[in-house]
Image (cartoon, rainbow, N blue to C red; front, top):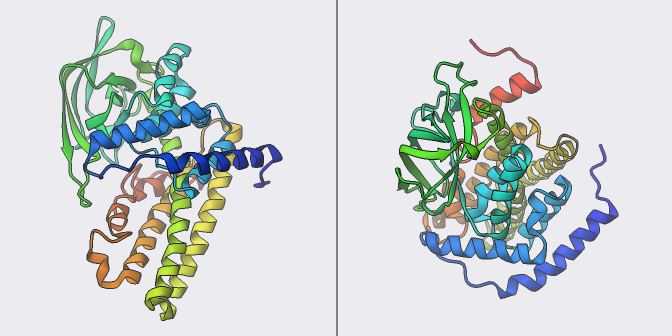
Amino acid sequence: MDLSYTPEEEDFRARLREWLAKALPGLPPKPKPEDWPGRRAYDLGWQRTLYDAGYADVHWDASPTMRLIFLEETERAGAPYVGANFVGLLHAGPTIAAEGTEEQRAHWLAPILRGDEVWCQGFSEPGAGSDLAALRTRAWRDGDDYVVSGSKIWTSHAEVADWCELLVRTDPQAPRHKGISWLAMPMAAPGITVRPLRTLAGSAEFAEVFLDEVRVPVANRVGAENDGWRVTMVTLSFERGTAFVGEVVACRRVLGDLARAARANGTWDDPVLRRRLGRLNAEFRALWRLTQWNVSEAEGRGVPGVGGSVFKLRYSHARQELYDAAAAVLGPDALDLDRPWVLDRLSSLSYTIAAGTSQIQRNIVAERILGLPKGR
């Protein structure tokens, strides 16, 4: 497989790199992690800057390879992360682009790209995390609306969101995977209660969401009624296949910073640490090649394939190992929350759970790639 870039793609890279060098110095200071209204405004402002410069549509209207280059260069330049725009740009938006009607695409995609609206993800429930198909949030038809009742947990960015990509059970009598629908729920609708959840790192980018007979127009359903599980697999393929691209680049940059810090404080003299950093360097180089392979596959399919589960499985553990190595370099300073990499180490603990647990990813690899039988 040819993983090299075409002249057109390299020209895009050069133009983007030049624009970033001019745009980034003029950005305002980044808000504090706990200032979610400020972070929302900051993240939407950056998205608007991308939109005005003609780069916002790279998430849907460019090829997967162009998207890869965009994420690689923005991360290398230290540009703002998508932040509060994460679900809209990398999950809901691509799903609507792939599965939505023309009217739905026209209604939702432009506001996401312009930085006008934030989305959150309402998938997991207290009794349906890893076993997502066990979700119990109900939606029943009442004229032109669905009436939705239930609860969600780990709802990303719910406290500042305008819309929610919501999974609901529309046919409780159907087999578990057959009675689910994918809805776009307005977060301003009556009957929604949001209760932020504070993480180990002290942030609150997740929330519990309680739904008490919330009315959602039937026109907001993406895909057919009871076909939501298939649509969800499209969403998750983006989440596991391409949404972590920028983070791989960031990890490779952190690895270089760690090596320099180790040389400066003397921990580089430890041969065990040097071997550890060397192995991680090889690991992230391999993950980058796997990312390119997944993107090449997406060029033909239109969405990432199950190879995203291979990537997500290994990346989750590699990220944890990277920040464990950072703790070894920092020594006693690894307990200081104001030091670089310490909060990243805490947040890395969630990666083997978020976007599908490692156990779920192993099942997907075993069944869909290796062809092994399902467990009984």
